[in-house]
Length: 456
Ligand SMILES: [Zn+2]
Image 1 (cartoon, rainbow, N blue to C red):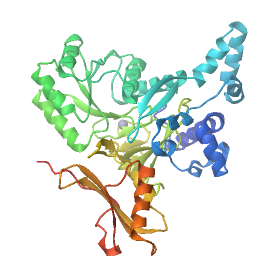
Image 2 (image 1 turned 90 degrees about the vertical axis):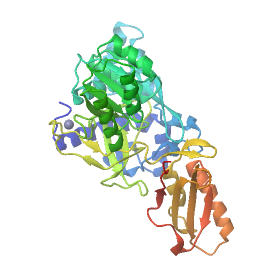
Image 3 (image 1 turned 60 degrees about the vertical axis):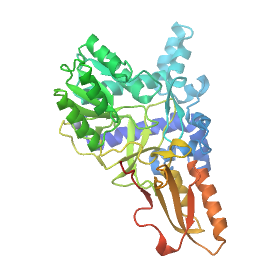
Image 4 (image 1 turned 45 degrees about the vertical axis):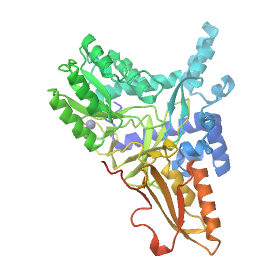
């Protein structure tokens, strides 16, 4: 059973899967990681023994200039000859045996494992493609069947998802989960009339809603007289906040629906959907298919609470190794859940917390706080720094103000220009203002703080 293994067994299985992933797949065939290992003077085998040998990376590390073509270097690029060298024994024997009986079948087996055939788009500060091979889609569907069991669903459940088919890991994960579990699934888009029409067509037991618009849509469906009585489970897609959860509970009771509301979520870049077994249980992960870590977002060292970092195991398209998702979690619980599963669970997930969507004068965009910190931390000409993000009192648009205390006695104007330039390079955003201050004049509080929009 994938979900009942002891912590020690899980660690052993993970270690074996990590070694196979690194030595047979990522090390030899991912251009980004091959180059990264060479630059670090390490090998895939050494990294397999100690994953912390490589620093965690995120979207701006692979696309430093904001150009999404950098994401291609993550894709595993193995040809037939390379595959034969690295494929595991049983798979290779199967491929060779089938080559004897049917011409073309050898390359079919190789291709299923090596050729990217499906792409989703991900990203917070930029939009980049994530590739899957045929065998990756099998993994996504298998994880989806598990998701169904974590959520307490079965093949007799019927899903209506208030979302349109699109090239996102959420849509792909949810549709393959329904397929893997054997449940009918409809994706009518998010227009309330269309969703209500779908609910009239099928007796839905599961209604999936984007968490940030779930309350509004439930009210609209209620008003449209959509049949909601058969719904027993509402899936809140995208790691709901406590406020969003209680708003949905209120909307459900207004509509007279008694359904449990469970969170499902896939972080940016990852392809496997995590879910809850009960409200607030934490998102259940898949220890044989991924290694999940929490890191301090500023220092990138292990922490009890922090950024969710994912290493995919057994995936052959885009190779995500110590991938910084931009999500922040309050804890990673490894004890046994009340449902009896021993899988690690993420609690208090705040989606995209490190790349908040700002409303700048130049338009809406995600701003990578990790890039801001990287541009300021550890430089000789800056002794201390703060970044304050928040709405301008003048027109309400968000501003990014960087405060620095000089580390030397260089020219103050030159320092401001250098800081602005480096922030732009690392975070893809020119600060609204760089304020050079004395040590006692820095704003109070955390190094990066966000002032909240005051609601009128
Ligand atoms: Zn559980």
